Every structure is written in structure tokens, then in C-alpha cells.
Length: 147
Length: 159
Image (cartoon, rainbow over all chains, first blue to last red; front, side):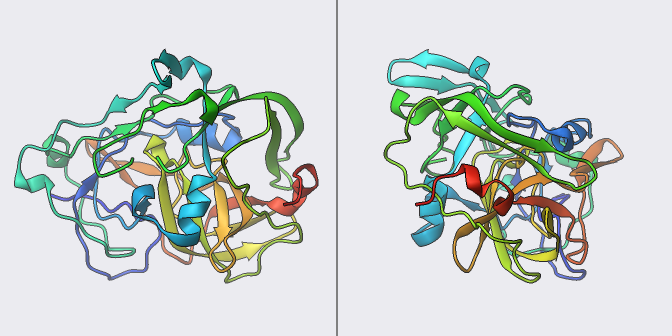
């Protein structure tokens, strides 16, 4: 039921299955040729699987400092005025988690992918946001800092 | 995200910059060079500039991590990669990178110096029945490419 792993590069035969993450559309600006090719590929509605990538809030030391100095680049069309500055348009990918099926986590690095299944599409991932469709013109750099 | 399931979607104006000038740009299919250097509308405040490598490409085997927005997700840090191949223009590594990571800084995990800017890679997803699933690759594939920072370091002030 946990169909795929997020780790793209992996040696064969390492066990892991996992919870899910979600994905959807691409973000970014300056869409170079390579990203245009990426954008033409099939896109997932939801991505399930093990994942050893780390979140900004879980970092410390040099990696936290590096993340604090890394920006996200977005199209100005995705920014609106907010009381405290600018609000970035996002989208929710997948419904809220409603059952234990969507819980649990795996930290295995380069875990083996579980088989894909169309049933995964109806599982209940946790809520999250991601950036909507790719922007194609360089306009605004929004400092993502620690958030 | 500031915590699990807690996205940060509003930013103070002091954290939002606008690109106002393209200082340099190269996109060359034959050499694989792909970068752009953009001047912002004002001096960045409250952030420490990252150090970038100003010499040749990282050596094969150099440990790496990348920070960015794979598939448009909130910021992710993907580590555990190594340089598989390198030439004067770019290097390839087994980074767990996706569309949306383009432009992401690629760090030498030993020095926390930016050594590359992620520019292209293998297909991210493949169709399987009704699903699009992640295109899993062997570590030996190492097919995610990053432009060497040394190619544009001259446009970036030294710390």
C-alpha cells in the first residue's frame, strides 16, 4: 500500500517501506531547458514512500546555516499582499490524514521501493503545501530562511 | 515548514527581493554549462552569504547535499550523495533531486561550500498503471548534473 520510495538513487536490496509524502506540481523560476523537460514529464497526484530528506526545522549547525541562506525563487504572480508582508500562493496536495494508515515514518536511506499501486491514490496523506505550477519568468526571490 | 504540517506562507517585505538585472547567463548544450547570475534590487540583509567554490570542479567522490524545493515541496535537504563524474563545466552526482530543484545550491558536505548549481537530471517520474511513480535509479547512475560554481564565481563578491 505504500507504493514508492522517494529516494531516487539507491543500491539494490535495502528494505524499507514507508509513509507518504506528497508532491504535485513543480515550483521554480528561471525554467531552464532541463526543467522544461522535467515539466513535460508525468506528474504525480500524490507520492508515497520512504524518504530520508530532512526538513529545515530539523536542522542544526552548518546545514541549518546553509538553509537559512538559501532562497526560493518565485514568480511575482504568486505573491499577494498580506498584513505582514507577502503571501505565497500554495496548494494543498492530498486530503488531511484521517487514519493510521497514513502515519508512521521511515528514515532508511535509499530504501527499496515498495511496489506501486493505484490504491495509493486513495490513501490519506498528511496535509502539506507545495508550490503550484511552474513559473517561467524570473521575477522575485523570496528568502525562505528558516521557514 | 516551521514544524511538521506547519507551512510558512507569509514573509515580511524585508525578506522578499526582486531580480532587477541579468548580469550573466550561459546555456550551452554542447558543454552542458547552464547558469544565470541575477542582481537583486538591494543589498541582502540579515542573511549570511554562502561560500562558493571558486576553483575547478569537486573531486570524484566528494560528499554532497542539496537544499531546494523538489517537485515544488517545501524546502528539503537531501544528503548522502557523492560526485560520480566531473569535468570543467559540470559534475554529476547521485543527488535525490527533482524538477523544482533546478537552481538549488549543491554543497560539499565536508566544507559546507557551494560547489554547484543543480541544472538537470534524469526523468523524475514514470507512469505505472494509473500512477506516476518516482523513477528510482541505482547509485551508480549518478545522473543529476550541476554547473560548477567556478564558472560564474567571478560575478559573486567574495566573503
